[in-house]
Length: 142
Image (cartoon, rainbow, N blue to C red):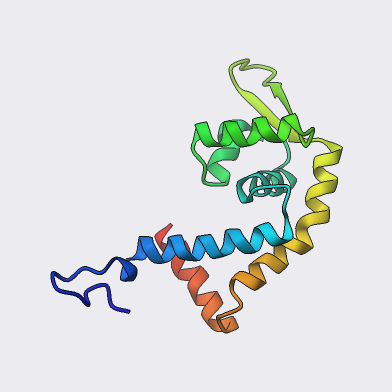
């Protein structure tokens, strides 16, 4: 659908923000059917901590594309569940360091196959080539 198919040259259904929002809503619904007890941002935080190990809360936010206020809420909820541990940086006491607990590590490793399935289901309407192209194009504009 062309973004300019109505009088005045604007149709909301053809705009990138609208289409991305619909695609995200579909992805979130698929995610919830496979991983009901975590949100996608919570899973992203756990998965990235598994990759990088201990890091500052602000750096983690940057790594998973979350602003400081959002990542703080995500981390606070994960800490309340015992999935991450918070500690002040040894030198800079203003800096909050985040690391996975053993339970957090166990959970994220257990959920990785489901995360792969979520991605596959989200992209299932596309051919493998189209899915690769979509990810490349979205990466370019993000």
